[in-house]
Length: 249
Ligand SMILES: [Fe+2]
Image (tube, rainbow, N blue to C red; front, side, top):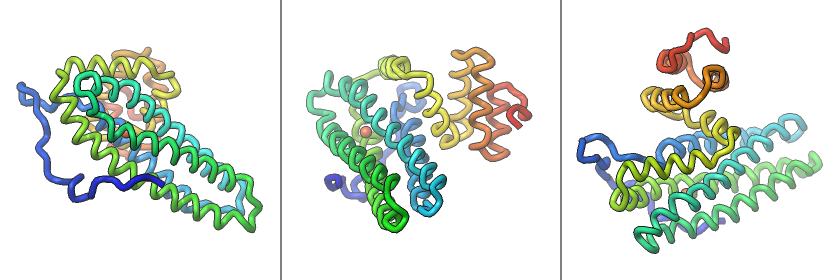
């Protein structure tokens, strides 16, 4: 359903992390949101693989989660095309062409998966098991393609961004992207990004939210996140946010 990706060996060739002159890591537009995507994709793939087609509620809930994932993927493509590719092309014409082609294919795959999901939703029970297995396999191929694609973005595209842009420019670009998001888009991104990140990364993200959000909105984010963190992870995040570990209990 998508074109072959660069070989895994090439995609996983050792690379040194890029450092700014100060010795700190360069600004990485991709890594946080891609952790969210990998987590959302992996959980949804497993969820679709265990659908009980005889249980209408279970079938429906799994397909709602799949649609949320596909909408998240479609939005992500648009954000990368609008903000990141435009920036790369402005300073290195053609630099984003290969990845942009893959984005077109991903859009086609998303449309095909939506059609298969609609067919499964409407199918009588006797036909549903075969449709569910077909959807699961095609979603697995979509996830596989995306895992390789994201690696290329985090290596090849980041190298271009770091070559042509300062960290201040990348932070400004990232700020414009975030400002384009609706509140519910930010909520979905936080739902998947924070649990998929390290405690240090979570602490940095929650500090950013604390600086931006009214206290009650920050508490709302924390309550939303709690069920998705283990006990130790929750305690570290509550400590970083300066809130009680008891909220949302
Ligand atoms: Fe992408």
